[in-house]
Amino acid sequence: MTDHNLFESFPMGKLTLSNRLVMNPMTRCRADAAGVANPLMVQYYAQRASAGLIISEGIAPSANGKGYARIPGLWNSAQVQAWQAVTSAVHAAGGVIFAQLMHTGRVSHPANMPEGAKIVAPSALALAGQMYTDAQGLQDYPVPHAMTEADIVAAKAEIVQAAKNAIAAGFDGVELHSANGYLLEQFLSPATNQRTDAWGGSVEKRLRFVLEVARATAVAIGGDKVGIRLSPYGTNSGMGAYPEVEETYLKLLPLLADAGLVYVHIADHSAMGAPPVPLAFKRALRQAWPRTFFIGGSFEQASGQQAVKDGLVDLVGMGRAFLANPDLVARFKQGLPLNAPDANTFFTPGAKGYTDYPVATL
Image (cartoon, rainbow, N blue to C red; front, side, top):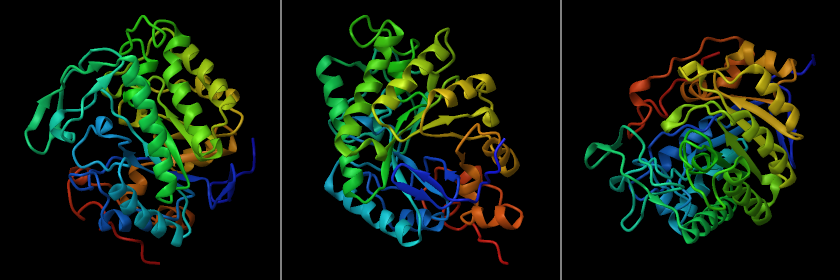
């Protein structure tokens, strides 16, 4: 047991976070069709800058990585310039913000992608179900292109360049999205990686793409500016547990530590119906990681405080609570009631359900 609390500052790499509360990455679909951030997004992030760390919504590192309608990108100068307004506003309000780089891989549809982009994945296996597009409504997921060696090299280079672009845009660092069924996790899981070459087959070969991306990103911008999100036992986008799931992540973490990454962020979606990540496994991951470790999802204030006291986590990630309460840290400190999130406006354009949640009156 420790005497740590949620509201004390925390040293993460070369940064000092003002508290131990993290605003989880949340797709909000408010960028324009070209993936450019807008003034509404500046306001949204600045409103929530009292979080110790903000992790942005998933940002496409390339045209091939843009899966959803109206998600932002970080692959061209217009996108970089637009993000500068966001990061400046967050910093002016005393906040710290990392860009989550999210290559969606097979979780995509051409109607959501720029002209000429292609859907790529480790293997040519379509995701079951349908994806929303602004232009055509719900559409079946297409069969992705199984990545060639050249495609793999290109995807890695795109993510590294997006990380450099994030630093140029003023972000304090990046989070590699290797969770929730997107491209990096697609390489980790035998359900989506059925390759028999150097990039698939054994656990070690399935780790290779994630490790090479992490190492190259750390070399490009500094490991102290690179974190990673992982979702063992997650069920998003066709994922699920497999016999080697714990072996996979317990082998991955020490290799990521050797690459110099500053944090590991475990996604736990059990509050939304996903299977829980076993507590013993969470503790084993914590033991396997030498630097900042946190879990995002399924926490309330009391359970988050307990996890910090127990030493299970350094930081506590919350999503919907920050979505609906721009002043969440102040509400927690003062024991004030929370606004309820409006699920109907999670992904809709405009200010409603985005920048119009009220701040508590004291």
